[in-house]
Image 1 (cartoon, helix red, strand yellow):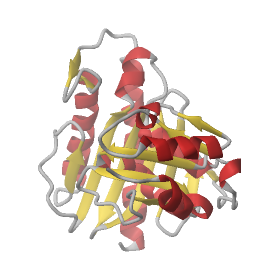
Image 2 (spheres, rainbow, N blue to C red):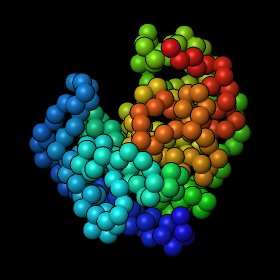
Image 3 (cartoon, rainbow, N blue to C red):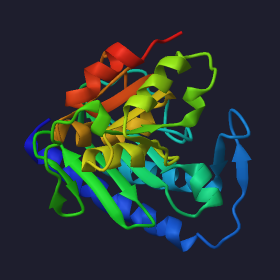
Length: 266
């Protein structure tokens, strides 16, 4: 991606994310219509759809040739990552948004010719925006995030939903239990985007999940690369930005060890 285009898209996305956050804040005390999608635990509100529509309108007006992949399906169907693709989660952590009124984020990843170039994650209620352009560092607001230091696994905090430690159809829970014993502790925040942002910031050291949609991780991908972390699928292969996948994101000093020693897919 040309530098001038990268700069323009980053500046526009940054401003639009802040505007979207303001839209959400203005409606925080308004009763929400809450609906379910794939299950009673998979929620969507009219605010999710309104924020996604807000982004779609901005992108179509300013970049009519760009494609938009969003969680709520407001954009068009996207089948390839040629050209420029915006991958949007209007409210990542909808369960938190509905029940806690905090711990949710607006997330955008911009993919150009198959490569992640820009990422933004806005922690709305904390008014904190994590953002990155490929090759230009990652930032929390206007402060650049440092490269992550090397660590051993027994020094690390692992972000992992307890669901994967119980019998399930996707991964050997007993091996993951061994990982929990080895690590210094575990955390679960209920928002994949925020969990990736916290990893980029260095306040956690790894994030594991075994079923994640691209809009959940696209915003964090470049952030992690820019601080020296790595995000792959559970086999250590590159993720597909158009498909549901497993995700292992971690400080590079422990990434391969986690995959080799503690993950066994079913």
